[in-house]
Image (tube, rainbow, N blue to C red; front, side, top):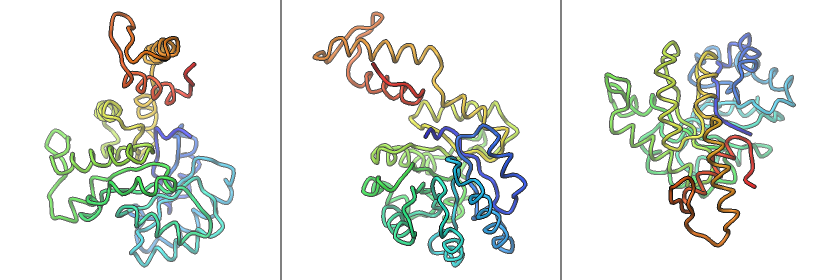
Length: 281
């Protein structure tokens, strides 16, 4: 399953659930955590449970639970009993230990998508996700909870780019995901009215090695999907490179269109073809 775009929907807004599914997003995240006020969490759980039961065959539903240490988590577990969404998103995750704790609390195995950077301690555990890679469907990060946890006034510069501490958190998540051999999912772009800014952000994310990103509004989905989908010229290049290496299986270096290419280029070609849903010949 491709995870280019993952659209958040507050769990207490059931009138938005169907619209989210129809938005073209690769996955919908039904949120029980930050977007739901404490008084509305029981309603959110009931709405999410009803919707997931009704869409049992839908492959694109994730549920974001409350954090493991939260008293709300036990209530989430009771509601999740018997449900089979595509995956669970785990906020405030702190490495492999958190993944193991969640997996052991579930009645049946479900893939887990941890948010890897929301506490100071979490930063030092990002490398451990490779030890539980079989339990993961990806790895993502957030730029809101961590600055609040350490008393920072913002995670961003005046031009919207991240300050160095949060660039570090983003980079560690990217490398942690690839070390675990799971998709690296970039965080949300909060200004949903700024599609040009989103386009630039998503382009940088794909350039850096992310395979998708999260969204907070349906209007962002098309831009995100486009950014993380190889275009015709990229696919043609990847097919040419893959075919050239296949024709010379013993070669470590080949020439394509006047350029000398080696095995890292072949890996990139295979990655492009995989993200386009194609296989190398």
